[in-house]
Structure formats: structure tokens, C-alpha cells
Length: 260
Image 1 (cartoon, rainbow, N blue to C red):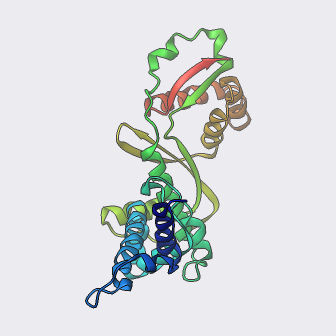
Image 2: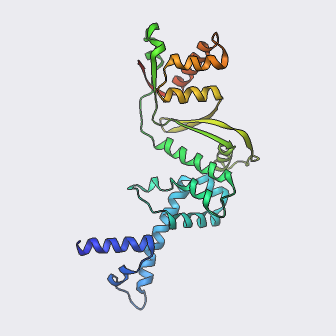
Image 3: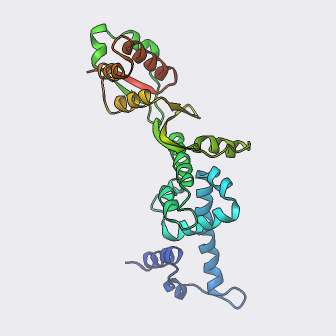
């Protein structure tokens, strides 16, 4: 190992673990001792990671307040290295951390709010794709519809939440009055996606949530109709399936429809 590589490794260990080997390589002075020189970098490293957490979790930061979020962020940084090339991806384990952190472990809402915000980050950062045009479906032959399979936009995400975290997130990020916090017995299904540079989300009825999940898993249009028939009856199912499909196309959720 070269001297440079060794020093880089020692400096990294100092930033991550606080080890002292790098101190032998740093020149201090009476005015600025070694500990002060190194401390500048250590403090800046931790602060930058906490800033990244704030950028990804603005509503959580607003809800906790600056002091408590700084303490949470510092605790997370101490126990979670950044393994990514981009700092944007730092913070992926915050939801799980909230469930174990003593000050937040008993507040399930915070974990769901973190999951919501991290999912929105993934929606915004997802790859672009050209949405499927309604005209493309007009050319599908009647005998091909039952075997038709759909490809969804890369930004599409699905969540099931028991708290009204999305409403709280909107109020916190828009500076509006916070809603009364609610938890429901049956989780509410949510759909999130992006069109161009704007992210969207909406709640789903259980039947549509199941249809979205089945279609994303490769289910055919015929299989979707069968699922809907179990809920709405055989006569109504085709209309329901057609309405769902039209809504998905209009929202830009689909990028391809392929006969089986």
C-alpha cells in the first residue's frame, strides 16, 4: 500500500470512527493544534450528512424541530456510514433507525412519515420513460386484450400506511395547519408516481391497489378482469377494468402494453 493510500485510509477512519492514527501525519501549531485542524473536517463531514438527511426528510425535520432533528441526525451518522457515491442516497435506513432510537421508537407515525418521504425521493429520482399514449391501445386487436400485459413507469411506487402521514407531510411542507393525527385499523393504500418533473400521489381503493400490484407483477388484462369480477361481479368487471386502464394511461403510469 502506498503512503498516500495509507493516509487516506487513516483519514477516513478518523472521520468515521474517530481513530487517532492520522494525527501523526498532521502538522499542528500552538495556535491551531492537530485536534483542532482535524476537528474541522470531522465536524464538516457529519454536518454535511445531516444536511443530506434534512434534504430528504424536510417534513420530519420540521416536525421534530431543529434541535431534536440535529440530535437524531448525529446519532444516525455515528452508526451509519455513507456507502454511496452520491450523498443523495444517504438516509435509506432512517425509518428502521427511528424504530430503534430511544427518543422515537414508540412513535410509529415518525417511521411512516420517514417511509413516505424516502419513497417520494425515489419517485423523483427514478428514470424517465415515455408514457403510453391512449392511441397505442386503440390498435390492439380484440382477441389480444385478454393476454395484454403492462409495463409501468419507473417512478411508480406503492405504499400502505396506517397513519395520515401524507396529509401531515403536505401540511408541514406547505406551511399549513397540521391535521389531527389519525391511525386506522386497515392500512390505506397509496400510489405515487412522477410526470416530467412533478410528483403525484393518491390513495387507492383496495380493488385498484390489488389491480395495480397484480399488473406490476406481470398479470394480464384478463387476469385483472377476473380479480375485479370477484369484487364487482362478472357483468361489471370489464367496465371497471377499462376505467382503471384509462385512468392509468391518462396519469402517465404506463409505458408499454404488450400482447402475451
